[in-house]
Length: 85
Image 1 (tube, rainbow, N blue to C red):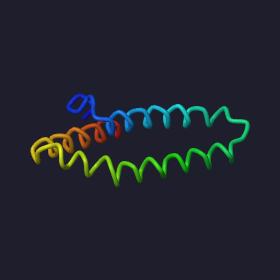
Image 2: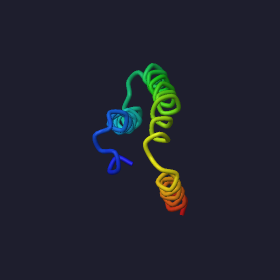
Image 3: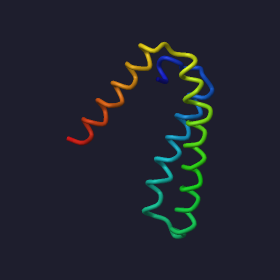
Image 4: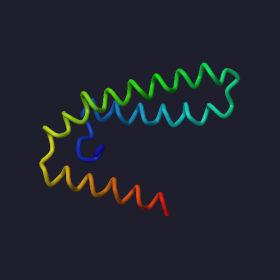
């Protein structure tokens, strides 16, 4: 998706937030304030999900063709299956 819409600010934000969440999740195992950090992570994740649902996904649906959307869906499903194996 980032390759198809490289300069789209919503895609850039999504990628940055995904990177940040990975860092935050990894840092939880070393946290001295686990409860507070878990709450912060949970709030960040909730806000990110709302951003994707309300802004990112509708924008993508308007920018890409039905064929492109189906192709992305197939790639996501393929990635899920490979992680489960």
